[in-house]
Structure formats: structure tokens, C-alpha cells
Image (cartoon, rainbow, N blue to C red; front, side):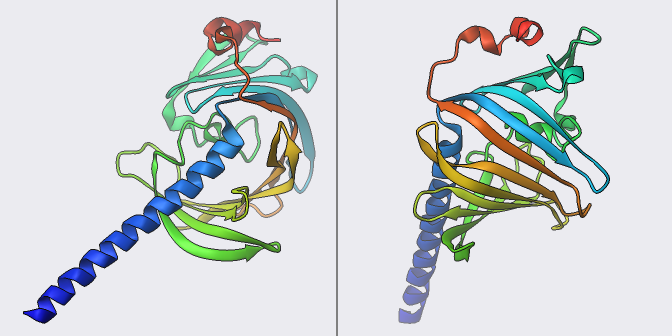
Length: 250
């Protein structure tokens, strides 16, 4: 009888320990996500798409409010200037000035390339939520480029409409700055790797200002995203996240 009681208490201890580890992992992911996102953010990125034979560059402005709303306006190059993207909750639209047409982007296209880059539609408008849509498992601590980092595995919840089968993230222990993220498909194959670099003060926060996305299936293919400027937590006028602004943004 005593051994049974001991076994039951051991099971309870293991269950509680696992729950605490999951809570800790989710809190780390939440803090890292909030660091990069803020209540609102607005700024400008330069994106460089690199291929073995060529490369091209573009600039765009962005606005976002929480995880529910985001807006992107292409500034360069000239032939793509004025193209816009609007996301509200789980819906996304794209306006193309050349044909004066608004196109609704269905959820099935969230994994498709954004503007010919290695980023997806989901990456740029953040349809999925790394805090709410995934289960989190603490894998321990590792050194990455000289920094001690938390290593956390994210697996999608059964009901979540997400595009990845698994994500593993490394988050700097001292300040919750993301350092790396590996993305896997449902077969467990690593599809891409995101490296967060040039960590410095910008917008009143210590954040990575250069992100390099490597395509693991196509060696030599990568996309670099450079944050030129950003402002966090400043109110954004309501008219930005509208269909009207989608066609009139400048």
C-alpha cells in the first residue's frame, strides 16, 4: 500500500513539474513576443531578397495593433510602390494599384511567399499567435553566439489554424531578445531558419534590427529584413486599418 501511495505522489509531482515548466516556457515566449510587438508599432523596413543568381531590394512602411490588425505599404521599388496589405483578425486583403483591384487572401495562402521573398504572408501580418496557438515545452538552456539562451519547443494546438508543424526558439536569457527560430513541417523536416542579429536600442527597446531568413530546402536562398526605424505603443489612427486606406495609403 505504501508503494502505491508513493507512486501516486510521484505522479502528482511529475505532472505539477511539467505544468510549471510549460507555464514558464509560455511566459518566456510571451515576453519575447511582446518585446518585438508592443501594444502598437509603426516603422519602416528594408527587405533584400537574395538568390544565387540575383538579388533585389524593397522598402515598406508598416503599422500594427496587437495581434489583430496590421497594415503594410510598399515604398520601393517604383514598379511596386503603392501596393498595400491589410489584415484584420483572420482576414487579409491586398491592393494592387496597377490594376486598381483589391484581392482577398484566403487562409490557404498564408504559407505562400510574400512579394517573392522567403517570408510568408503569415510572417508579415502575424495571423498566427505564438502565445495562444501553440503548446510550449521548455527544453533547457544553451549558449548561442556567446549568449545564454532559453530553448523552447512550440507545437500547434489541435484547434489552431497554423502553418508549422513545430517551431524551436532560442531566446536570450538576460532580456528575452529572440536569437534564432527553426521552423519544421508536419513531417518533422526543418524548412527554414530565422536568425536575429544586430541587437541594439531602437524605439526605446533593445531589439534585433536585422533578421535573416534561410531557406533550408534551397541552399543560397535567403531574405534579409532590416529595421530602419520603429515606434512602439504610439496610438495609430483608426482610419489606417480600413479598406479605404488600403487604396489611398501614401
